[in-house]
Image 1 (cartoon, rainbow, N blue to C red):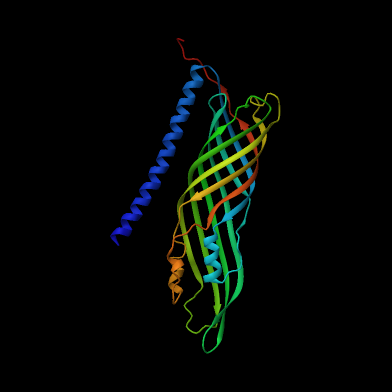
Image 2: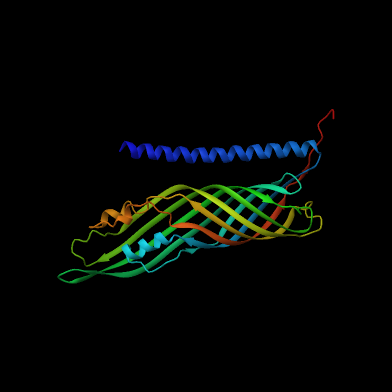
Length: 281
């Protein structure tokens, strides 16, 4: 019991340390950018992007192997709803930009099937309905290479790292003619977990006007992302108690979704203002 408690405390400590490090890094970069812009009497190039996109999930092979072999499922992929997101960006020199992004996406799995139970006296059947949803909010600090930001049409690439706030809800509905069946209906997992996250992306940025940095409505963006996750959680901890001969695979923590590729469209809005030169200079 004590080693498990220590392990939990260490995991929480690492997550908090990681989160605080990201905030401090972001604050340091923004402060430095403001100083540079003020000293050079330049514009403070701030944009906010709103986006919507279609995610294509890269699922864990390990998860679906367990789902098929131990639970009798047939589905081998997650469906998804559209992804939405928001990004706050600062161009702090001629080629580099930092961005703080927040996105929301949801993957789900729904299916019903029969599971045949073979024993010595007779064959029995279970009718199982699965309902699994995974909601994800990755919050990322990104660095973008944007060398042509003063032109009307431009491309940029970026990479980011941060945290994914993950909420998983899994329930089963089971109708069975197995005598004294341990497999029962109910919620098998309903928890929130904090995972690590990273992102790689590239985009085409199409300005609405040649003076694209002077207009409130700045540009239309087409962007392709890969967002990956790392970390695991105990998805099968509760349901494993329903198995008479518990498979060893159910003891393992797992990450059902490794990440996703998404194709997004976005609108960019300018929030630029001229920095005033301090008095006495």
